[in-house]
Length: 289
Image: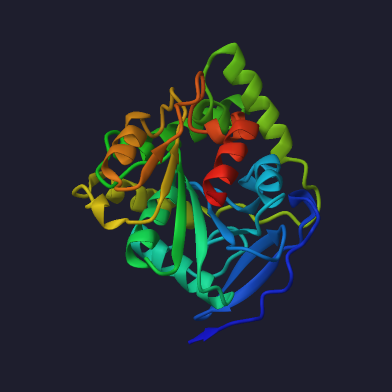
């Protein structure tokens, strides 16, 4: 059974001090934050592999929340959310739908980043009446080239980061150029701005389940993207070493209503954070059109 709690009015503060709330769904408590205006279709954000509430760039969330009600959440077993993290994207998508319905929403827009983009594709296909529009960033279709290599790259970067005392995001999310390194450092500083009531880190058990899910997604037979009839905006960095950039070109070509943002130059997996102003403006235009 789902035990819904009435979703309170969104916070009008910035993401760095938005309160963390929770909703109980079939025995698990899902943590979430929300801010922005109450009216309009809510925008639900689906985070990347190993990401928690505090891994969203606050400038991106604040930018979107200037015009939209924005909700970030931790899926089952992720960060402060309880329960066991599923080992398939499809199960994660099922839990995301349960969370959205527990808040009482009949229609939402979704923005999926990386693994969150895998989840968003499944939610959009399975719930055509629930999902109005979709934004996909740094992601790709099932069976997309290079996606099954993401777990190995992640583990390698994490081990290297532990040895060098550098956040693995620097090498995974940004290019090795001077501009890429500068952008990476700036994003990492913004992710530290919230100093109180931060989300819990992802547990090793949860990460292992997510890595299995990503590998399975990368090795699956290609999805029939023609079943996704909603308008979809796709964005990517031109030099993504995690999810190769050609995956976004494939998405844009195969989605019936796909709209491609020109690849962000000298940008990797974290392109939408690196080019936050340009991305937010394009996303808001797309959602409002």
